[in-house]
Image (cartoon, rainbow over all chains, first blue to last red; front, side):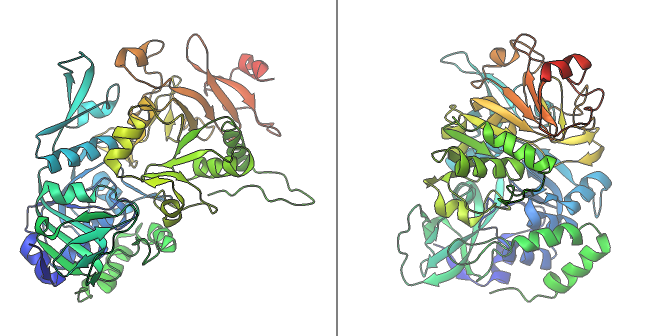
Length: 271
Length: 239
């Protein structure tokens, strides 16, 4: 049963140095508050997993929490490059970053395999690309039809962290809008943390709502605004200006560090 | 990001980016469904739905199927896309139930490099292990290009984009030439057009090599040498 916890305690309990951690959210519901708490606690040597690293992983990579990254699209959506991500890969700053990259379809299937407790997923994809030589996929043959397919390995996640709109007092969570791979991430990880905009007495079913029962989650934290500058549909709006601002700010290492010192490290953490 | 040309009594000449967007939009007159990323392809699809094809189904990678945006979204996951969609699905469902089986008719893709067979690079410039420029990576492109009915590439008309050999093949167009896609069991037909800011390239029906087949109105500059189909022959064909 999910414990309703404060953010610093939940992160300290669940995230340890050297862990493989996925903070998911496909453009929507990105768990910024929790990621910032991971930075504040000085976690090191994490392998970060995420389909679209986005600004949050740009910040986490730039602050040196990661030694590895597993991903499928490392861009600032609609704006351009992730400059801290690029600086880590191109120049090893602030530390070398090993990468394992996939396609979206590959990552989505890896999450689904983890949630299903299977060692791999089978899909059509990767064939004919240079990705095959640089990542973990294997060509296989369908035992029924002989068709050439590929197998991708399940993700091996220590921790999944996601953000949702609501939880009730028993830690049952509901999210709606773009659902991404959050349910798969939570069910596919050994430990899970869900931050929510608000804790309510009772969850009202929403069109397209995804409900994750509290007994499948380790900790639920109330963190209003916890997905900003991403958004929580129906509650907060995506701060598109911030995504453009980040493109300018994050080009410079010193400017980046100064901003993080002021806006993240100095923060006391939402709880 | 460009916006649709303004409606005005005394029209100002359209920019080459705007003409590129309109050319892409016109390809969607008869299409049921289009898969789009952000930027010019998204603008083109929204324009097509407004001007030519009100029933056009816009599908975004974020999981929104049948989105009806009235503004140009900055990201593929903007709230308006989810709020106006016919349905919103998870990422595994998007790729496994909708893209993989070939339910989407046309896909718009961009790339940093395009070769003569319409293969695309969006991963690195330079060596993979020590890249000169690290690009965002594959995203959904490899499976989108394999599964969707056809692919329209939207790219700038420059020698930086059109290269003899890709630094990295992220996405298969026609691979090594005729028969390549069929050997890999791809469902979709592959690239049907590359829309640049100067004109349109289409695969030669026999060799599948991209060939310049149209030049946008008002374009006077000679396409850069070395760009596929930019020979004097193909200029003649373009007329």
